[in-house]
Image 1 (cartoon, helix red, strand yellow):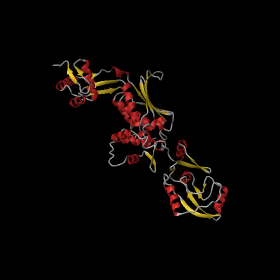
Image 2: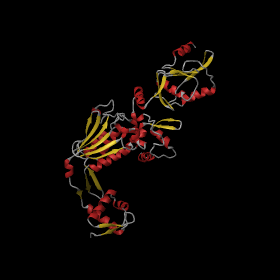
Image 3: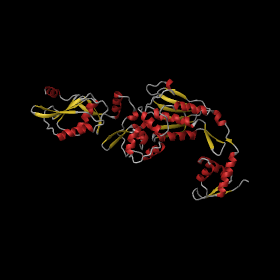
Amino acid sequence: MKQIEILLKLGESQKVEFKEGISPSLAREMVAFANGEGGKIFIGINDAGEVVGFETTNRLLAAIQDFARNCDPPVKISAAKARIKSQNILVIDVPEGSKKPYSCGDGYYLRVGPTSQKLRRDELIEFIQKIRPYYFDELPCPEFQYPKDFDKRAFSSFMQKGKIHQGDASTVDILKNLGVVAHTRGNKIIFNNAGVLFFAKEPRRFIPQSELTCVLFQGTGKADILDRKDMQGTLPENVEQAMVFLKRHLSLRYEIKTLQRKEILELPENALREAVLNAVVHRDYSIRGSIVMVEIYRDRVEIVDPGGLPPGMKRSDLGKRCVHRNPKLVDLFHRMGEIEKIGSGIRRMKDATKKAHVPPPRFEVTGFFVAVFKKEEEFKKLPLIVEKTVEKTVEKILLFVKTNPQITQKELMKKTGLTRRGIEWNLRKLKEDRKIRRIGPDKGGHWEILEMST
């Protein structure tokens, strides 16, 4: 009792809070003390330190326990009745939490002097850095609103590529199992940054640095830009769009040895894809104002991501050790079959370039991580490889067209075994050689034979 009287004289402080009664705001004080060094909440005392009294009932005690349980994670408290100056009060003891950070329905709070202050996003990041290893992709993104900002199309694509069958499970349950839901407060679902980067309608609105930019330069320097595209979708969409950009602007030749036409890119596509994936998965997303860049020069391709190597990893560890800066992003791409968790991306890049008989990638490590792929000038001089089987393919297509003038490209693909591009290439060649022509529209029209080889 004497200790309480002393605390009343000292007033509210880092570890003492006065309240006349209970209200939902009580949860703020609980998480603020749990996130700090603990403290005591006196119910029945006003801000001036005057005892006004508080009659405790079982119903009120249950309500107080509910406030504590509904925090995320739940805050452990103990409550004891006390009597001072002929008035009843309640003393709630909140020990320092062991599972920081704690939050309530209003957000994250921390005790600063005699007040409980709400943490802004940057303050929350700094706070988490101090209490445990910091992973950007695990941080909650309170600005994201589910389901308003949720992209069902991106989620469906992820499920399809990951071969995940939803069955009777709800979308929310699957998202929780995927680890992209940071918290749930009643009916409110809080996504973490990994969930935003994969399933937001506009990820850049919440995480501006998630953008990926592709640039085609005229020469070997950055002076003249021929083409540029800014990718602002989800991370899987950005990867796909970056690969489209690369394939559009890198030299290509065709090798036709069988009925299938093989496209050969001057730099191996699987090596470039590994590098782009490596960039979006392992970049440091806490660095704002800097994005992943895919740069095509006359003599090379550079794929650049901000942040250098993850903490604890040396340049000599490349291809040998694996340190994940964004473990949830790694897991999500792994579920899609895009990457392996063991960190074999560097090795696969080297293996792919070796198989394609081009120089291995060079890696530069500063404040950025840069994968450099050198082009081969000799590539453009290599002839198109066409064998006599092409003539047989042409004869087959002409025969199918003559037999069925309404035949579709899809049917030709099935009958010949060629890809869609292979069929389009052969039909275009036949039209250019004035052997066939199209009568009417693509749908509902038909082919006409102009010349039939004997």
